[in-house]
Length: 416
Image (cartoon, rainbow, N blue to C red; front, side, top):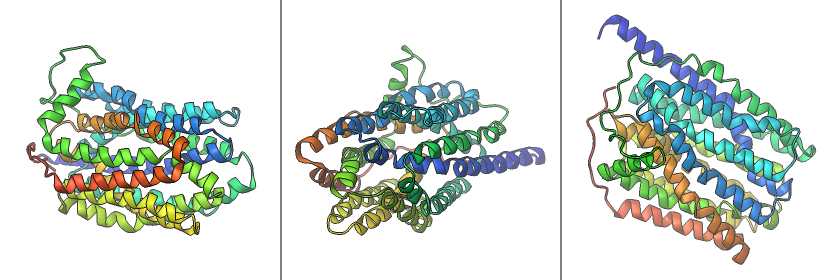
């Protein structure tokens, strides 16, 4: 490799890493607010159980359409950057209208648009990262950025909850400002360099049907040809279904059963969950390199199973909500790494966007059932049995990943 080529690759790596750090830090205030949006719906806008179920269902189901946004990247890799920037802006645009619109259904619509385009941009972002940054540096970067954003979240948690309790409707202004700040990072994204020649992926099957069915056929082909990747997806599917089942139960439990304030919820989500991420991220990063993927996934799914169990203890003292979010943060640190990086890990020398696209598509599939079923069960038996059922399903996912050994079929090792 010539000196000029090495210098060009080093420059691409440096600016890509800088851009990713900037994008995440600028977006964390918005992301942190978004995570308590379902609580705001119940607490501030008195959303019904039906509306909460629609919100909880809409977000993951929309991921099916996110899958289609990125599916053309397999055969048109030159559109990676425009795909990322377009999705980034469209995801946040509706939240600029919140100071002028005070309506539950508009907020649900805005959340649906965010989920559609936020997930739609992930395959492009991960493929850009794979092209410009080597494997070891990529994993360290992703882990450290996640820690940095949660340190930022901890700082935000000191005053955001108190502000929301003191000023009714302050969440609308906060969403507007944070969305604008997040959108501003596109001026950095525009400058991300890409390799001069992007060759098409030779392992992509030829187009044999229309634009609606072809991406699904690509997904099925990938799952059949890579049983190791399919095993990972089914384990994640079980654990993810358990978490989606409890989504409608959470705001009902927080508001109706525990009567939590904004400050209590933001302290748990921003500070305690942030602590869980910060203290565990380095262990998860090392585990990603040293543990088999199926065992790594089993550990994080088990961590998620602890979350609803500890929430049930909060009926006696609300402090258990903090402990629950601490363990959720620990599990989320591992989940963030493996879910986002699994495409680059399994792809190796292939185009990673097709693997990441399967992640997104299956989020939508489990979202078709989990939140709807959770909302129906909440109406019949209440949120507490639903929380317990979610914990048991996650434990089932843990057992599946450990007991059923993955079939091995790997591509050639990735060249760093």
